[in-house]
Image (cartoon, rainbow, N blue to C red):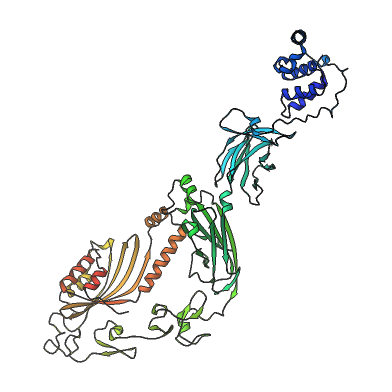
Length: 632
């Protein structure tokens, strides 16, 4: 009869990982009948007890063994065991006595599965809870990797050059429990839940694990190494966390990697509370151990455009900085993009950074009471400045000293860091374009006196003068300036008649005094350009024809095809709009600027004829060639 208590015990202990041989040896050592032990083990494993025979049984006697085995085997196979076959009269097993003390494994070699592709590990060696794990190598990186782990197939990974294992112990419909070795850690994750884990107990989280889903009873995880992030120091360190409007801002970014060179991209995202647009920029590319970046302010208007400088904040509110470091190795292996070339920020968002830090800055109150709105406010009496000595910093509405003449309004000059009235330095600075007046600079102020005398080579023929008394008077040109009105030049009007421009060209053939207003609408380098220019030929001087020009209006816009081209190169709509704003700021500075050039008559006519046909070839070299005389 098969001993039912032995069968139950063997079933229970085999389910815990103990082998039939271990159970057989232990029970025999405890004094149980070898035949009963073999019968019970054979019943549980559905095989003949002869598979367990070893040298320990030989001493019983070959003849006796053969007789016993033959009898037991024939009875077993002829009748088959059932619950009624168990000997319920056998003495009760001492359950305390049956606690097996022998471990499954003591060293890793005990777990050898003869597979060169697995790492064989003995978990809890030489303990009653010892067990063998045979794990496949899995390469982790600083980018999330989707991995399926079966309950009977643990995975092997490395942290700081040390091997570690992940084993799935239990799976439910919506959760999975994993064990991580060498330092045993058990973690249960629900679907969608993630955790960072310190696998080697050094105080730093080394592993990121997220349970994505469970498919057909198999848990699917998202796993990445945090090893590189642990070696990366990334900090945003402003001089303080709260500033006032207009207060100077300073600080530094701390970016260091402790394990040698690290080629990466440092990417920044700037945003402001209450404004749904932001600024994104690549601050640095290369070995981050060589970079030193200063902390600056930024200013966003309601459209999300960056405005003004970066030495102070212009408005109250909360400002957010987000700095991320992306590994160039990851970028190149994942996106197939060379880190050294222009990086499309939209592509960069497809991967995860090695590390990201954020910082919030509060801006409250003002350093000063607003003093001005425009430069006019600083050339009049206002709080904190003297009349006409400063310019208005328009963002913080404060009167400040100048550094260059460009800081001052028209007719003011920067002298000793103050804007003072300075209309002119030479007579040329007083040129208003009126050939009937003599323009003079006296004590930095201009005077304009009507010419009444007949004077050679002053480009004007006063009333009552003639060619005999004033060589500026000619029979061809007469004494009056010719007014040709206005004309428009554009791609659409290239083939159209332009009588007003013909009038100007005809007068230029004899270098007669003439004036015209030219409006130009052309596409230059992808930008639609509109300009309005006043021109006047003043006459001959030193055998050359003198042409005066003044820009009265100028602005740019981007056609749809240019905007699409810029989007394709990686620029955002906000960056394109900002570039256009800056371009038009430069254009505004050009309005009111003028110049005077001297041309040989034939060359001036050729230039004007080409312009009429839509060809513009004037260059800096031309300016030098024709003795360009600026009158700014």
